[in-house]
Every structure is written in structure tokens, then in C-alpha cells.
Image (cartoon, rainbow, N blue to C red; front, side):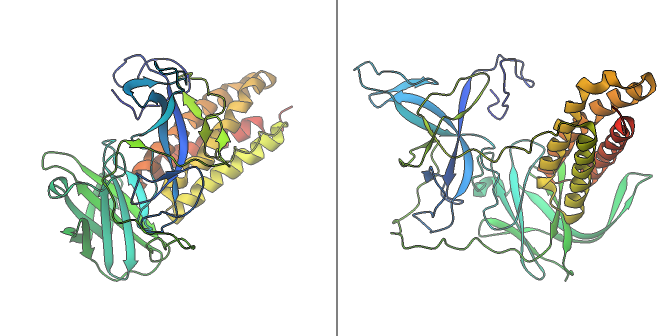
Length: 377
């Protein structure tokens, strides 16, 4: 019912409470504008020559003569031939910007959007569905949006007064507005209502420089005659460099020999000493703050989750603390873990006010953990 929910162990869906089913996930390289293209390696799109980006798809096994067969484990078809891999697009499997801008997910967990600032006084907003496909024209017409370049926030009343706002109008499949001239880094907020009766969402953008459309990748390629609509099933070109194994969720074991793109770099190892763990935890908390100040909201989850893992590594050492420190450290670790998840969620939706509030709680928790464990055995 909710394919965007991915867990690492069996259980029930946190949304509908139905039993989770196993799914095998695989990273592939695809074209930013032509997701029917899928490869096992980085390279160039054969249609528009853009550099390929990574996305996540579901990997299952089927039979050419029996497409109704769809299994997570590879086996043999009724005619005795080996099953063939089948790759299917996943919701939220592609959160890469397609026009060189900043990419966010809407709180409704369906719409996605990308803000671009290609030149002075021009702001563009690209809208996508949950598969990162451009929003159909009929749905785009329902969207009411504006871009705000100056406002005053009253923290006591919790209200915002807009000083400069500009309506976003549809132009060839994109919403855009001519805005006032801003110095770099330029900060602006898009306020979007996807339906007349729906809520208004806020997305905060910070552009350190003017955005640029992705350039065609180097190399000589044969250009295809056209681009088909993005299908749900993908055919991945074979590659001798493909790595065996694929990521799985809900307890599904990997199939030996199944091709997959190289996994992302693992997080740095947790240090052995408490002193080093506390030092890295403090550094990761600072890094989160730096990213927020730079406007890189969608990237804060990396140091936030690294800090979460460091805090969790301190839990087995709570017994070494005296009662007073233990009473502070235990709840502080729990707060840090919870706010790390909030930073991830608020970073995805690009709301600066929410992420700033979560960061204040996150840093307070990190400071309490560091103080409790400082000079601990």
C-alpha cells in the first residue's frame, strides 16, 4: 500500500499497519530526464548526452513468457529456462535535481519540486510526482504558488509578514517569476498550494551561485530519435563491471551473482575511545549547523545520522557513569536520536524554520551528551 516505506527488518507498516513484504533494492544509473535509461555504471545518456545519475529501483525475477510471475528470489521458469531480472521504478527512488537546482520532497509525500535560479531576477520551480517525473499539465494548472524574497518572522506570535512576494506562473511546463535583484548567496522561499483545498507548504532555497543546467557528458554517442514516457519497468544494460549482490529490505536476502551498482561509501567507523566519540559527535553537530547556514538543507541528514550512530555507540557505556551523569546522558541520547530523524525529515521538505527548531534541540542534546561523557572512563 505504501511502497515508500522501507524498513530493514520484518514488521508492520507504520502508516497502514499491514505486514511488510520483502523487496530487493538496487542502485542503477539513469538519465535525469529519461528514467527509462538504466545502466550499471556512470556514463552519459544516449538520448540527450547528460551525465547519468543514481537512483533506486526494485529488483525481482520474472519469465518472458509468464510476466505474471514476479518473485524476489531467482529461480527457474515453467519451461525450465532461468528467470530474468525485472527492475521497477520506486517512489522516492530518485531525489536528484534535473535542472541544476535544489530538490525537495513535499510534506504530502507525493509531490517533489526543484528550485532553480539560472540568472538574476529569475526563479523557476519545477514540479514532479513521487517518481520524479514532471507533473502533468493538468495537475500543474491546479498549483498556486509564489516566491517570497523578503519577510519578517514574529517568533512570539508565530506569524510571518511578507515584504516582497511574486506569483509563479506556468511557462512551458515550469512555474517561474521575475523577482527583485538579490545579492549572492540569494535566499528565497517558495510557498506552494498543490490544490485549492489543500494546505500551503513552504520550501526554503539558498543559492550560493546561479544554477546551471547539467551539461552534456563528454564523448561521442548516437542520439536516439526520441524519448518515450517513463515506464515502470526498466531494462538494464549488461555490464562486465557490475558488482554482485543488491540491497534488500524487510529481511530479503541478496541473490548471489545478481548485478548491482557499487554501493555508496560506508560511514566512517565509530572510534574506540569515549573521548574520540565525543569529539566526533561535537564535530558532526557543528557540520549540521554549517550546512543549514549554507542552505544545504537536503544534505544535513548525513552528519546528523553520523552523530546519531556515535550517540548510540555511547549507550553501552552509560553504566560507567555516576548516577547524576547517567540521568542526563540517557535521555540526551534519546533526544539526539529523535531529532536526527527530524532533521532528516525537515531537510527533505526544505523548511528552514522547522529544521532550525529541530537543530536547536539536536545541539542541546549533543551538548548534554558531550558534557556527561567528558572525562568519563
